[in-house]
Length: 622
Image (cartoon, rainbow, N blue to C red):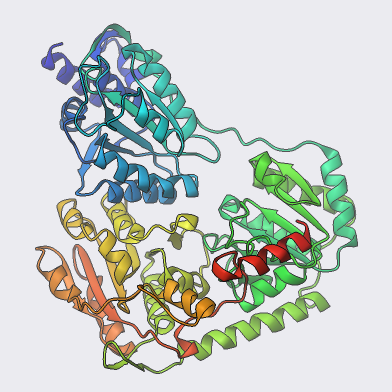
């Protein structure tokens, strides 16, 4: 196949900005001779995939060559990164924050394993992204480098299909079927990562007289609603009898804030969010009791514990979300809105309402109004009790925010507590309109109790995947959008993926990384102390100068965050003026003083708590 022909095709498509328009104009013949690699690039282009995060290897040289030509024509943009997991995290963040579908490219072997591990974040968050791996050859000439060295076929296909849908293009013309499956997987209502495996010897195969318009188009999921009147009738009858109603929301409630508030007003309900659902309902909403779960708030967990009717919107029953199934102490019924019928019917004594949450909420609100429900006063007895709990939580937080620097045995000086430092950085991020991205661990657990989001996507976390290194990697999203991120990282999390300092300079990323350094895995240390009275192998004695580390890379600005609020504010003020990534190193206290954390007000089925929590779960029978 002529490379000149490929270049000509790319230039024509660039001129018309779509394959269809180029064909319709007559400038591009509908039937062409293209390689499998080019068909993949063209197919993804037709689906709106314009950005690739890649670590090219021996298994993807042909795909890389096709991408090179199309990037030169201005049709795609390639971000070569230094670690596949970091690329997967950045892809996840881009899809979550902008809705744009990117692709991750690497070879099979260790590179694919790294990217595959990072896809856990995509699956946990319903972020549909492409993973393209150059697979082993199909002629069985012997083991290929980096393949799983077993005498079996399609092992990477078997492996990747565990995390999402996967397709191996063993037969060249099956690339169309692969792209069709990819479109429906990445574009689903609750999307998944899609793994497209391209054997090395198949990539350069030329597909003769290939129909460009046979390439599948992008899939836009239909917003299906529930029209079973019986479900709304039962839900309304139960709501009429309930005395204490709590609405608990997850990520699937995004875009439903107005409907959730309207429903809560009709039912005189409390609203509680999951850890990654902050901002769907504004923090200032009187009925909002903040976050609930195993790391929930005083007010959020109280509302969950005492409600007799629970309305779940857009959430899976993740262990930390509902205290391993023990949060609903007095729930007689659960009305569950979810697009997935399995999740909608998760609890016993539930009424599943399956379909698009917003459409179904609107339908039920109309039904409630027709049945005589009117907005309740926010001064009802139920709300009076809840507001008292919310005030108790706010006072609890203020006590921690006003905590002075404490003497730390590791740092041998007085330094900030994590709540004080996180609150200071949150206020800074909100003031400049930045997106706050939290890494896994203690920083995240404290962070989602501290944030005061008034709108969606002010805060992003890795959700239930607990993926250390997510936040720093996600800063690369600033290279691919107009988002300015502030990453909240523990010292351990940052060192999982520090190559953002290089990739960020290479791709002109802008943002701020704050390293909260307590020289330990504080979330696990705290758990060990709570369960066994001591910590074990969750800390180290190695001092790292993160400022020097950052300043060693041209284009990165390293700043010492200091040991007081004033010093930290002064450091943060320097970051915004820097045209690139700035890293702020903040030592934070770790010790026995209870003001050093936001506390734990819920249960969790882990460690030596399991027997008690499981017994409670079975007692409740949900």
